[in-house]
Length: 221
Image 1 (cartoon, rainbow, N blue to C red):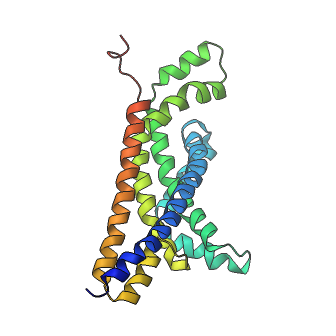
Image 2 (image 1 turned 180 degrees about the vertical axis):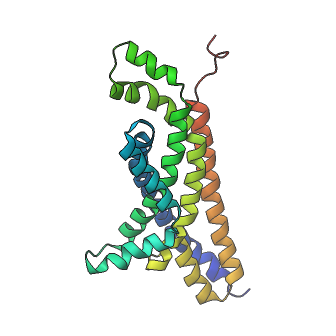
Image 3 (image 1 turned 135 degrees about the vertical axis):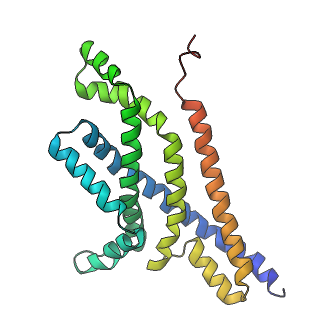
């Protein structure tokens, strides 16, 4: 245990890696949402070709390991374009997340009663206006519980970026463990930090769900 002071002094170094982990997670989730939402709308409201394209994209991306996608972008694309490791990591995790976000958003959109679209059209709204003003505001609220699970998955998958040399939480834990020869303690601290990040993320989204949840008919009266 003579290495314990060194481990304690390394905690700020690990927390700096956690900040990079958070950044990758947030940007990957945003990338996945920006890609997944249009695909979900294509799947529900698009024509035969666009709906088929969205479904095929979902099937392919959900069938690929995130690490393989990361290697394709970072190593495989190096002959054509050199992507920084951080950018490649965010894009790779974002692409993989987009397929899952597409499916959860599609489910949320379809859970909004079809009668609401009919009512909006009867009031003179265009289809796009009805989607943007009536359907999506409700669907995004309904998607929060499922999106909370996806956020936790992406947070944990962010550890994969260590494989392309980024000094995020896992990579820094590996470095500290190699220096102190206290792998159990160091990786336990790493696991605790991941748990706390996941716990705070889920609790925050649980709170958002309570704040933005749609009232039931009984609560409206």
